[in-house]
Length: 142
Image 1 (cartoon, rainbow, N blue to C red):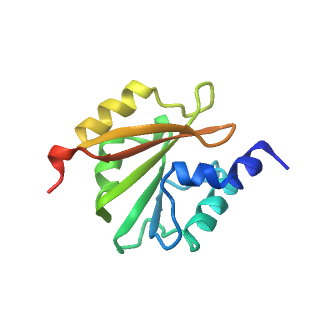
Image 2: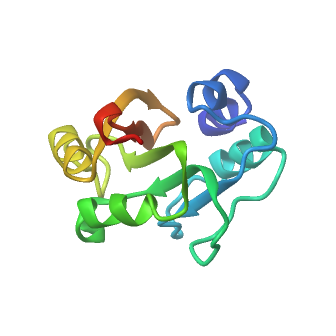
């Protein structure tokens, strides 16, 4: 079994990402390079399928796969908020340092702040991807 598969089966990982059974999770930024073992773990954690970019349901969590050359991160984060529930979270998945598409942590912080979000934690989710959990700043909440 690969390191990613081991990580994907670790319930602690999905707990740290805030994924719980019954949640509605929308996935944005999917491409051929995403970690399929992680996707399966995410679906297992919520006991359902991930919604795609076309869905218009309210999501408890938005998983955003992001690479440095995907465009403007602020715009992507603002778009991720479109279907997000009031107390929901954006899980920003980015390639780790040294991997193609890596985004500097300072860029993530700057983009999150511009989108009205702040990071609560950063988690390694496998050999190639890291995750930053972003939530609305308290002053931005209603």
